[in-house]
Image (cartoon, rainbow, N blue to C red; front, top):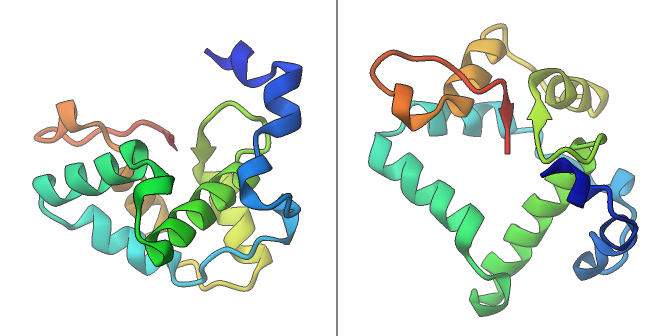
Length: 132
């Protein structure tokens, strides 16, 4: 679990495939709240497919533009996950969006909860509390 993420080797090389770029210099997409809402409102099959792509796609076999986009998304996630636990909380994401001048809508908490809900709770709502 979390202990493996704190191993010295992982801590030293976890961003090596991202061209040694400093994580804090990575800008977050200011349109992310709108994209999150679109994802949350998508049909279940589309959400599952997008999550599979994000989690299972080997960056090395993707077309160059998609490869770069996936690496950028992973890089941004890692920069948000300041504890290294593999999860991003609503507060971490909200703080980063506000710090970078993004417009955070009033219903952001609801959107975040919808994006992080587990599929086993699809009919009853619920949420996971973080993105991983």
